[in-house]
Image 1 (cartoon, helix red, strand yellow):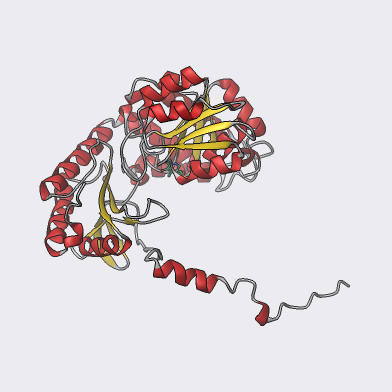
Image 2 (cartoon, helix red, strand yellow):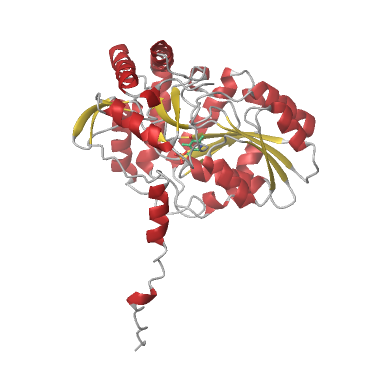
Length: 404
Ligand SMILES: *Cc1c(COP(=O)(O)O)cnc(C)c1O
């Protein structure tokens, strides 16, 4: 019989420091509690027991509730089961995964694609596989947290260049390094602006750097759904395309698209691909169906961008400071944590939910209400959002435009 270890005495609570840490987070106005939705990611929903119009979902094309997408997920569960049961390298690789990878590489115009369990893992997996110690990464200051973590995990030297500054990226990459990589979001997740991809392609060519674009928010949105690089006319000049299945493609998972050699290499050395279970059959089938519906109902992409334009122009008319752009991400920057929370509550009191974003997601002092539109918002619903902001602005000086 094995001897039982004595239980740790309560006095030696190794997690005791969590209390003061949480107090510190609260004191900084950065404590978060989870909202509870009682329904799918649709414009009209119930949140914390109240009916609201939501402008906070990444279900951009509304495909998470499309009957064909739901049917595909249901059929896949019936035919393939609910879980893949293993890593792709062992037992989890089903025909469904390959079918989806073929559709993704076709969407991106590449030779092949590799699916991961999430976009976060795709970023970690690609960067860490492609560069390492002694290598050099130039990374945009506003890149998504998953790219920041990917840089850290790679152990490469990281030069963070000022947002969207291709000249600074070129200077950063001029330093020595065995291999060089240039990392950028296609559409920046908290500002909704687009990377200067044509300039970055030039910088990558001049410096011999690998160019990787995280297009989580561009896929299914720009370039007729193909993404930001297609919209900028440089899709064939991107070495590593990254995307997620969990936003416009209405499912869960992530992917890397690129050359056959790149994908072969990732399948062999990318740790999140090797050491994580293959994504579930219903998720794969849903993403595959979402791509098909996106092509068949191309009107959705058009309506999405029209809604984005309507919201931007409406908020500007109300006198709010909204960065220029065309993507469905429309941030209203209000300043500090207290102002952001008060602004969110004021808009919510008017029946519209727009999530507040605070540090560490955005830099201190740039807290914002980050509105996102969907193709399935009606113009009248977009107008109700604008009205909620108008009325909240009248009640709340914090929402008034900041000095630029
Ligand atoms: C959402 C997002 C990711 C992560 O994708 P998931 O599939 O949600 O893990 C990566 N990069 C950017 C820019 C994102 O917005």
